[in-house]
Length: 134
Length: 134
Image (cartoon, rainbow over all chains, first blue to last red):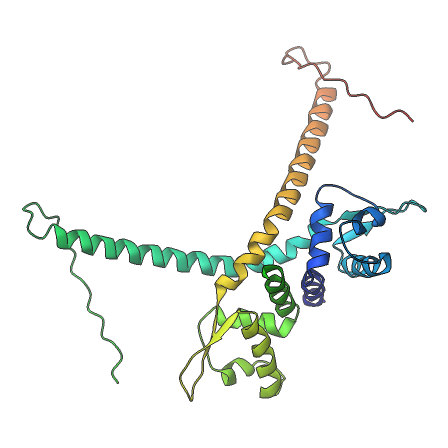
């Protein structure tokens, strides 16, 4: 199920060590030993995190018997980006509405200031909105 | 810690029911009862999911005593979008490289086909790249 695979991706990302491992792999593939260096963790603990990332498809391991380098599988993050799309649209819409509102406020203010000036641009009639009755 | 708050966000998103609840809230705030309708779940089970979402800051509840509508707090998803940025850059770079490679292949092919044609555009000299020696 694709929704389960997205859940596995989110679950894999819900840990700061695993996100730090992914961040490290942005700059290239590396060995488990090298990956473990910056963490105050045993190799088995790191290996456990790597298994979670591997099961979620976020990393892959090389086939070389002795040196099985980890590399990031960045395409596995695309479903997260796609999932975000609807929400991104929502916050952009809200931001746009806020922007419009602030511009209106600004326009009203500068209108108030130029109330006495002679050359006033035609003012559009405001629609009246009735508030909810209590 | 901001990394823990990001972990909480990812953990909250690692469940298809919670993601479905968020998706439902895109179209506006609603009551818990309404939210529960499409799911084969008890109200307490839904409430548990709502609590996870609320703790992660992804939803907020109204203050009205009887009807405490849920609404999405879409800004809580921005840190996820920000976190994705470096990875997005990575997959775009890879895509660009693939694109360049495919164009080169195409150019080579059409070069091969027009080898015998008389009006050949000036061909830029190819830089020689030495492969790694074995």
